[in-house]
Every structure is written in C-alpha cells, then in structure tokens.
Image 1: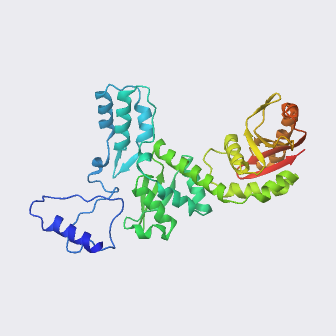
Image 2 (image 1 turned 60 degrees about the vertical axis):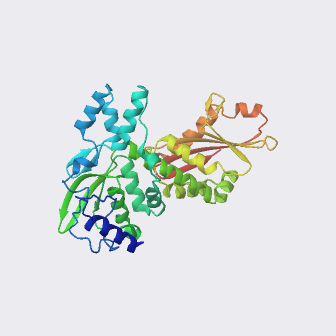
Image 3 (image 1 turned 180 degrees about the vertical axis):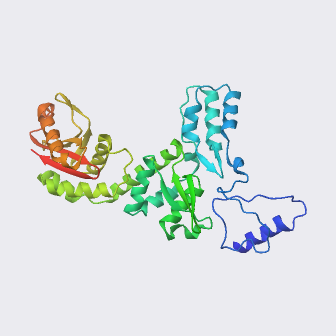
Length: 361
C-alpha cells in the first residue's frame, strides 16, 4: 500500500502538467511512512500556524452574516456556546459542519434545539480508547476538562498514528489535532511548546460525557459484584463501603458530585443483582425513596436505600444517619407492607467525592 500511495502521489502531484497546486489534508502529519519519496517542496501547515487559519471553519463575522441572511435572530449566544471555540493559529472559528446543519434545521423549524451534529459523523473511538487505557492521573485530568477546567500538555506535531499509544501525552495531542480539545494558551519552554487545553464547546462536551457513560455501563456489565451484593443482603456495611468506594475510584465523574450522579452510579451497580428488581424514585409513604430493591413477592424482601451528599469528609456519618432517619420519618416501607413485603433492610448512604459511608437499621 505504501508503494502504491507513493506512486500515486508522485504521479498526481509532481509530474502532472495539468495541476497548478494541490492540498492534502489529514489529522496528523505523515512523517515516517516515506510515501512522499520523490515528492519534495511540500509546505506543511498545521492548526497551530497562522496561514490559512480562517479556512478551517467559519469566523464570528461569517456566522453573524449567515444568521442574518436566514433571518435567524436571538440564537447567537446559543450557537456560540455549542459550536464555537476552535482556535486555528490566532483565529477562533466555528465547526463548519455543525453550524450549517443547525442553521438548516432552524430554517425548517424555528424551535429547533441545538444538537451534537458532529458527534453523529464520527465513531469517537479515540476518546473511548483514551478512557479505557486511562490511569488515575488521566482520569483526574478528564474530570477537570469536563468540569470546564484546563490541562497543560507538551505538543508534538510530528506524532503519527503508530505513536498514539506510546504515551498519554500523545493521546492528548491526538485529541487536540482532531478537534476534541482547543488551545487556550501557548508557551515555549526551552525547545518544547506547551499548550493549555480545554474542551471547545457544548457539542464536544456532549461527546465526552456520552462516551464516558457508554464506557462505564459496559464496564459495569463486565465486572463481578457478588461481594457487594452479598454484603448488601448481610448488612455488612464495611464491605459495602469498600466495594462502592473502589468502584467510584475507577469512574470518571462529570456532574460535580451531585446527588443525581451518585444515584445513577449506585443504581448502575445494583441493577444486575440477581433475584431483585431495582426501582428508582418510587413514591412510597410520604415521599420518594432513592432506590428500592424488591425481591419476588413470595420472598417478601425489600431493600430501601436513601442517598445524601456530604460537603466534607467529617460530615459523612452524620449525613448517612440523616438519610437512614429519613426512611423512617417518611415511612418509605408503608405501601410496601400493603403489597406483602415483610422483611426490610434500610440503608442510609452518604458520599463525599469518591468516598462513602454506609449505615443500616
């Protein structure tokens, strides 16, 4: 294949009398495959260069003109938040495909909401592989990015596909050159260029979040949770704390540790517990319990879980006891007794970042 591509490029680009000039595009430079042998005087232009920077996407002026031409008003900030943010050279540009698709949709329906159009044109496999190969440092950096923060990495424009998995830095470089990250700042230290990187817009953040959810759900299905399930049924709170915290450490969170994040996380761990059906936010008594695990009616066992989030590590036990007290106060077991359940296990679980405290009645 290398011989074929080399011959093709030489014939089409060097000895072709009908060609004025040609543009060859790609995400990464081709530096080690020798397909340009015999073809010299190439001008390399990367997204860090100033030349042609406005040709990579639409500028703010062009987007404003487009919206005005199609009589679309009041959507400028929304469009900017979703599709702007890419920095090529010193020019900030919009994702051209996404903005065109969104304007086309708005022309048909003025109430159309923004969508991740670019996400549907790519498999996004590079993000999945980055996450699956991630160590704790990479996971923390990923959380920082999704939370709106930035990370600093050395940039290597000569990275090729075969180098991607040699180090985590190469993967970050690939994410930058393929548009999943944007340049916020740039500095030179000795002979190395360092970039401060961030997620460019809401569309790209959507890709990160949904890829992470898919990855986590896949991992959940592959793991063995027998020890957690056994501890849950035997009221072994110390084992439960260890198992839940260990799994939290393996996840990448992006909801700022809100209660709904822990609710979904714990529900995901428990949903495959054999012999039980998981109910979420089911109305019972004088309120809604966070999670219910119901056995078959003839067994008559109900496990009630209430979740709280602690502001500090020191508050973990207090919050867990508060959650347990809420189960009793709001009588979450009342309607279940009418349905024939007679054995109840009640848990109050509090979370602080990636640690938890479990108390039981």
